[in-house]
Amino acid sequence: MLLLAGCERATPTPSSPPAGAALERAATSAGLVPAAARARPVGVFAAEAARLCLAPRPDGTVRVGASVDYGAGQRCVARGVGRIGATLAADLGAGCAVALAFDGDALVVPATLPIACDSRCSGRAALAGLRLERWSDSAAEAIRTRGADGRLLCGDE
Image (cartoon, rainbow, N blue to C red; front, side, top):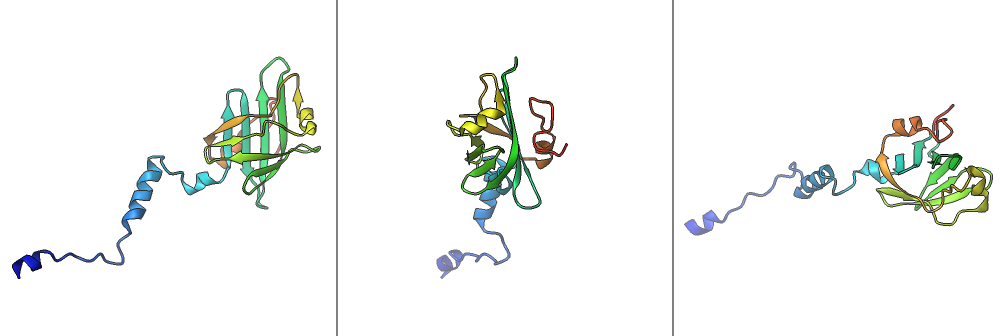
């Protein structure tokens, strides 16, 4: 009888959080699992001389701004709007429509872009094939990001 009494286990109370939730919080804090806010591509993305910002708009779309600056007249600046879905469909105006891939940490510009996108660049610079890592998931920083032309990429000027 005494042996059986020692095997008795306390049953968890319904008000205690599941162990999995605590593990999920710990993994998110450690950066192993992206936080839900990071699952949405908003903020600033960058790679060397390239910057791309995404700022939310009230209608559910995002402002998109991209800039590449290699100096000496070798630069690109493009601004437009985008819709977030399986990819980020960005319309940078004048026929320059691009589908950007997003993997949670980076945005990838396709290696081949419509010819209309060439008008956004000068010299030998190009937007094609860029992989831009997330620098910030702050909409406020995205709005303050400036392009190679000195103007705001995703803000109102």
